[in-house]
Length: 171
Image 1 (cartoon, rainbow, N blue to C red):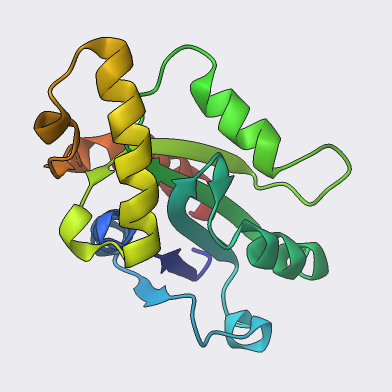
Image 2 (cartoon, rainbow, N blue to C red):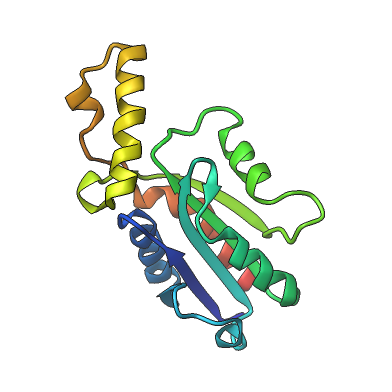
């Protein structure tokens, strides 16, 4: 079996939670990407990277694309987390926005519904979310307080397809 590592970048804890669940289920190492260098991945044949989606962009996607472009012998998977429920075409749009043709692309991509945690957001992110929540509440007729409430929609079951894929390919 190829040696596996799960890397993540997490601002509010949702991507970290998914990364830890995946690593636990696969019995492999899990680390935040901060401080990791490409050389640190030398012994791993399978790299899984997860991070949140902010304004359509996966945090840290440029770094992992750059690394995997230089390490073409490795198999890599990316999962993104976001508060937007996946509608038809949503996952594909996130993938296409972050991994353009002729760029290094992961072997597989997954989108996991996560949530919003206002308590763990930095000032700037909270400010942006308040602006979006205000606009959304006016459009949808939702109470502003409801729109600014933290919510957790993480589900360990959401990782099942990713786990099946890794076990099949890494085995």
